Length: 198
Image 1 (cartoon, rainbow, N blue to C red):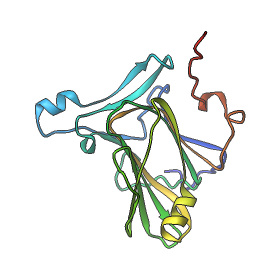
Image 2 (image 1 turned 180 degrees about the vertical axis):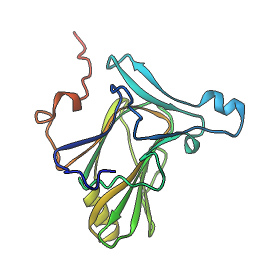
Image 3 (image 1 turned 180 degrees about the horizontal axis):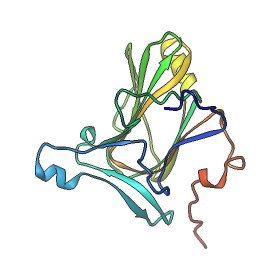
C-alpha cells in the first residue's frame, strides 16, 4: 500500500476524527452465536474524557473481534518507518494488538502484545509479550527495529500488517521515523487530556 510512497516524519493509518477512519481497515466480528454477536461491536463512539470521537472495539471474546490493516489479506502495508504509536484507552478488559513485519532475511515475523500475557515468548515466527496499561488513555510506542534485532538477530525491513483486537478505544495509530518529544508532535498527533482544576 505504502511501498512506493515517500516515507518520513509521520504516517497515520487510523485517525478516529476522519470521515472514514476505518477506510484502510477490515472489521471482524463474531458470527458464532447471536448472544455473543450482540455484545460485540466495532463502532465510532464519543469519549467523554477527551471530548472526541474514537473507535471502540468491545467483545467478550477478543480473538474474534478485531480490525486489521490493510483490509485486503493479499496486500501489505510496506511501511518502512521503524516506530509505531498507538493512542488507546484501557477499558479494563483483555486487549491485544499484533504487528507483522518483514525482516532483512525476507522472513515474516509477528509481535503480539497483550495485557493478559505474563511472560515474553520468542518463537521462530512470533513473539508474544506482556503489556501493562495505565488506567484511561495510553500512548503505546513500539520500536520495531529494536524488537526485530533483539528477538531474531535480523534487521527490520518493513511493516506488513497491523491488527488490533478488542477491548479498547482507539484515537490514532501512526508510524514515525524516530521518537518525537511532546513538543515536537503536531497538535493532531497529541492526546489532549483534561487538566483537573483544584
